[in-house]
Length: 158
Image (cartoon, rainbow, N blue to C red; front, side, top):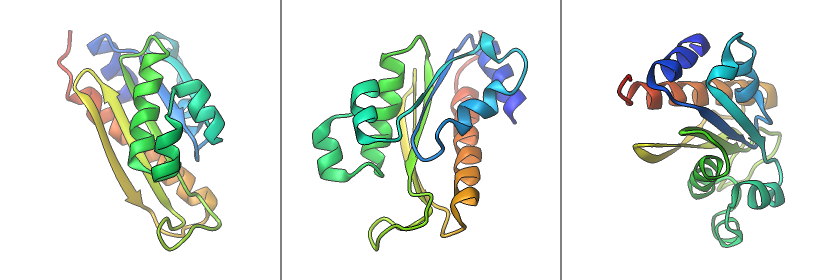
């Protein structure tokens, strides 16, 4: 799937950025592990703390206060912020609770995703469950890659 993502981006003349919290760069690493990725991958933001989300991506303090870091609202602002401060046309973001821990309202394994691009911004939440930290992070990485692939497929080729 990773090579398909890079090929789709090339065919559509699109540059990609990532904005990651709970995966701490795993999506960016998955893309840049492949030779030739520099043609379509511009940068990745690892914004693990709320301060980083605000400083690097422009996530609003009021959004964090009202919804918390693990929310669709923050995921959307992360994705749109990545576009705003980069040369990318498509950005994927994710923020979640890999574990251990969580709460009744935000359980372990919950990850919120955002994808921003020429067609707007879409958001979704996936509850992967208490699979353990490593498994949640891998599942979140793979889901983010699938969302990125879908966003690129929705764009017309050049």
